[in-house]
Every structure is written in C-alpha cells, then in structure tokens.
Image: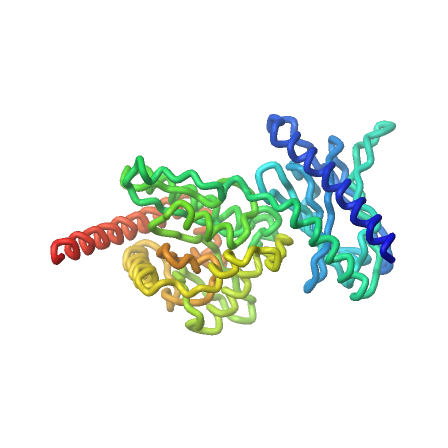
Length: 417
C-alpha cells in the first residue's frame, strides 16, 4: 500500500512539474500561439469512461478529484475552446456533464461532474502523429468512497503546492496618487461557471453581466469623478473569496456585484431588477435560494473551499461592520430610487441574503440582479445595448448621490469636532 502511495505522489509531482512548465510557456506566448481545443467526446460505460479532447498543440495537464459532489478537475495551460455547441451537456458512462473555461491568466480548466466515486487512471496528452491532432486523454474508472477519499488526500497534497492567484487579484492600488473613490464592479460567474442560460443555451449570464459591467465602468469613468476596477474583464472565473479580497486589498469604497436572475417556470413569470444587501437571515425564500445558488459558484468551477487559508475563511464568516452595513443599505435605497424611473424593478426590489461576495467587513457592497433571464421581456432588455446604457446611467446617478452624501456627512462630522 505504501509503495503505491509513493508511486502516486511521484507521478503527481512529475505531472505537476510538466503542467507548471507548460503554464509558464503559455504566459510568455502571444495570444495567437495559444492552443485551440477543436473537439471533445466521451466513450465507455458506468465502470470505465474516457474523455478525449483534440488540441492543436501538445499541452501540460494536471487532474485531481473533489468530493460532495464528486468531480474531476482538469487544469491545462490557457486554451481557446472552439468546441461543438452544447459540448458537455450530454454525459455518458461515469460522466454526467462537464464544463470548461478560463480560470486564471495562463490557465484553463475542465470540470467533470461524475455519477459516483471515480479513480483517475490516466491524465495525459498524446502528441500529434500521422495527421491526427494532439489529444488530451482522461481515463476514469469506478471505485468506492473509501478509496476515493484516500486519493483525494493525495490530490490535496499536490494542490497545496500549486495554488496560483489570478492576475486580477494582485493589488494595483493607486490610492496615494489619486484621491478619487475607487469603485469595484464584479461581473458574476465566468469561465466554466456560465450562470443562468437562456435562448436555448446560447445566451449565458456570464456574458450578459460582463457586457453590462463594461458599460457601467465606461459611464462611471466618463464622469472623471471615480476610479473603477473590474474583478474580471474577460471570460475568466474568479473564486468568490478572491472577489472580496480584490476589493479589500485596493481599499475600495464601493463594491457592486452584477448578476441576472432565474426562476423555475413553476414559480411564475417574475420580472424586474432586485438589489440585495448582506444579511444572515434572508428577507424571503426566493432571496435565500438565490444566495445559495450564487454561493455555489466556486463548487461549479471546481474550487475546493476547504483549501482556503484560515484568514480568508475568517473574512468570509465575519459580519460586516455596522457602519459598512449602514452605507450598503443606503446605497441600495439610492439605486432603487434612481432606477425606478427608467428600469423595470421587481415588486419587492430591496432584499437581503447571505451572499459571500457581500461579506467584506469594510467595503459597502450590494448585489444587483438586473432582471430575470427566464422572463422573455427581461431577457430582451438584458441583451439590448440601449437598455444597458440607460440602466447604467441611473446607477451612475445613484453613485453620485451616494458619494455626495458621504462627503457631506464626513465634512459635517469634522466641523463638529
């Protein structure tokens, strides 16, 4: 048994070394040189299943497992996915479904949802040969939970040596040279975490909210009154705690997380925008369900939250400071007041729930659900450039009012001293 464990560890380290070297090479390459994934397919049954992906160049690979739910995560250097539409929506054998996307600068990820505990028998890339492209091959076999958890322990050991921080989270604080307030806009989801889908799967929440966030950024910057930073500016996945840390490290004075809602047909054709603030107790069942769904983003993208250092866990669990919560509620009310003149609002537009991204203890934070992608009228607006412009303008007015009120309040307090 000990011999097999030692062999597995050595193999994992060799694979990891190759992966790290390939990642470094990918970062140094021009975008045109990125490998392209052109096809992906499954074969096998519920005892053994193989995933094969065709790529235009040989790449490094690292695969590991996660439990509850059972998943296999495959990390590769940054890759352009040009796969057939709806790839991953149909499973086979041990694979229920899979998703893929960019998770950090220079790195892409495939997350495979499996039907039961599995063992990774092979995770390799075959060189191009005889006119055939290079191929990523992942072989999985069924196992029991006890064996799965033993291998999981080995996987976690390797993971701790290879944690990479997304480029978007590195501090670039210009506060000392620029006194303007910094606003952080957080487009939800990204990479393998698509969020809600509509229009037969072609319209994805991650793209809708990124388009809106870029519009909002441009309009805020146009005023000349604010510095603006986005947690992501492309189709990259950013873990929830990194979004919080991004704002805190830069000493942001306002954090706006942007999403687009969804409801099952059984719950009616609900529509309109909703603004959420942080609360341990959700304002209603819908808010609680939404927070639960949004907080699963890390699980969807294959991030194991148990790996986070204690100081991050403490940040995520701390209650927001009383003053910060007051400012968050004040900004939420301003948003509703400004948006109601030109944006359709939910019948109960102000709600609260325990969203992880709102838990920075020192940054006023709101999460806005722009509308329901499950509602035909809302979806039409969400995908309209003209609507994005109008909605962003109302949010800029709310931001202006928020900072005028804060500055006035600060000056009044200073005058009383």
